[in-house]
Image (cartoon, rainbow, N blue to C red):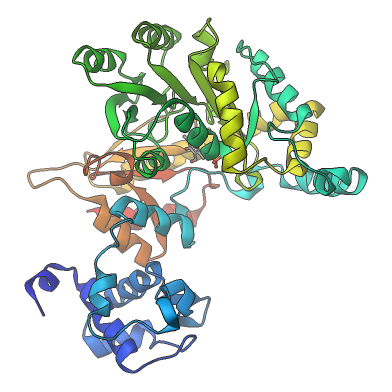
Length: 486
Ligand SMILES: Cc1ncc(COP(=O)(O)O)c(C=O)c1O
């Protein structure tokens, strides 16, 4: 074993040995691996380490789990086939997979682990459980619309989106004093497509984009994919993006091309800035000729008396803010419906939408348009927000009870998630990366802090989703997490 290998955690060493055995024995696709218990006994390790090793191989696509049956050698297509259809050569093969492929960094890997492999206790994604969404209503609407309006699936779709949905989005925005023109709106495949289009419309590879720190991890990965360096601006749990820090960066000559803000209900902090701060942000950026991209996907899920206005509402020139939104958080993530109001970049965004995905399927757009027109949306939101508030409080209390003394937890002004910071004590700061792997090996998933910043920032933090109804199982999972964190 070389010294680099000795630095590897035990479970990775075991994973590597295990895979060498699989290759050495020329096991075929679909063949069953020894059980966790057998592996632990054979290799003299704990059950947790054996399970971690298997999960590690699973996240690499080498093996797959089958419920209640165990782990099996994955299909070769998942593991990556070599040109000419040969299998990977035995010598050196484990080294190749043991090190991360250059294009998949640690953040992308952990994100894929969260998104791709469901675990028993899901404290990871920012989402509510299905029972809190109007799934039954959608099921009826979708069936009825598909039957009565065959053209919704049978004819060509419009690039900008279904007109009745665009009208409803503009009508909703009027209620919080944000003027949107239905002709400006482009419906997208989720808010993530809206963010991609916005960035591509205003910047090119190499352009610096200022982001809140911490921020939504997919945004950081989008920027990496678009080769646009991210410049972090501190974001505060109570007041959101630090406009003074942004001003200082601009004064120092940082070549910021655009700023991305998740102003209402920042993910992961749940912050909402004051109207004065939103106005100051708009004015600063207008003065410096910097574009603002605003992600307002959590706007409808803020808990205050009145729905907070997006920053875009303070931009009276109606041009400098590209406002992105969507229904993945408020109505259901599976709809994959987002939208963008691109201001003065509307024509560019419309052209880019054609090259990105041509259009968004209209059937679910029609269903959402009907639901919004029917007037039940406000009541649904009231119920969802009430559930989120009480679930967040239960989760918060559990974290304070079970996590190491000195753990700090946010009290968000909106959204699904809590952000917790572990105490450092006298030793070095704790890392939630190890905690992530150990907790997943026990079937508990959360979002580790390093995903939300650059260069290892927030490694001592974790994001917990409060979208699930509070149960004794959840309480036990948080207690276990607290034990592992200690
Ligand atoms: C700030 C933010 N924007 C966008 C998204 C994703 O939106 P969609 O699922 O509609 O693509 C998320 C999901 O967590 C988010 O937190």
